[in-house]
Amino acid sequence: MPFSNRELFARLIQCEAGGEGEDGMRAVATVVMNRARAAEGEFSRVSEGGNVRNIILQPGQFVCARESVGGSYNPQNIYNMTPTDEHYAIADWAINGGILPGVDHSLFFFNPYSSSCPNYFPTDIGVIHNRVGEHCFYIPTVRYAMT
Image (tube, rainbow, N blue to C red; front, side, top):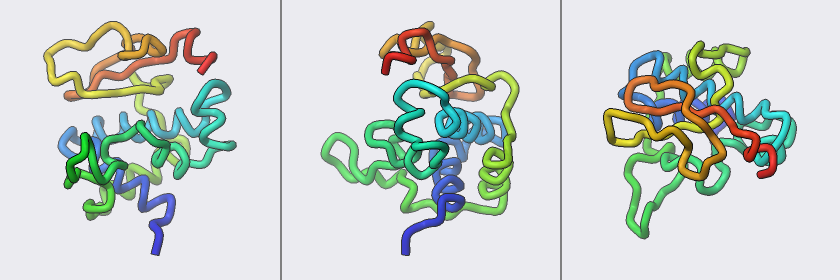
C-alpha cells in the first residue's frame, strides 16, 4: 500500500533531519512546503498546485527519496523510516502553514559537511540565507525563476 502524503512527509522529515532536533526538522519541512507553494520556476511546475508528494519524489532532489545512490543501496531512505508522533506533528505543522523563522523563503538546503556554508547553492540558483544545525538554507536568486 502506498504511503499517504502525510506519512511520506513524516518519513522524509525523519530521514533528512531526524538528528537535527526540532528546529532542524521544522526547517526541512518549511523548505518542502515552500517548494510546494512556489509561484514560479521548477517547483511551481513540479508541485502542480501544491502536491507535496510530487515535491518529495521529484527525481534528484532528496537523497532520502532514493533507494540507491551512486549505484549502491541507500539504507538511509524514506522506505526504511519509522516516523514517530514528533515527525507527524511537524509534518502537520508545515502542511497547516507553519514556517520556521530564518528559513522562511528558503527553497534549498544541504549539508556541506563543513563548518561554513558556501555563499551560493551549488548551481547558483540560491543564495545563503541561514544555517540550522548541520544544514545550510538558501533563498532563490533571480536565476531560479528561469528554471
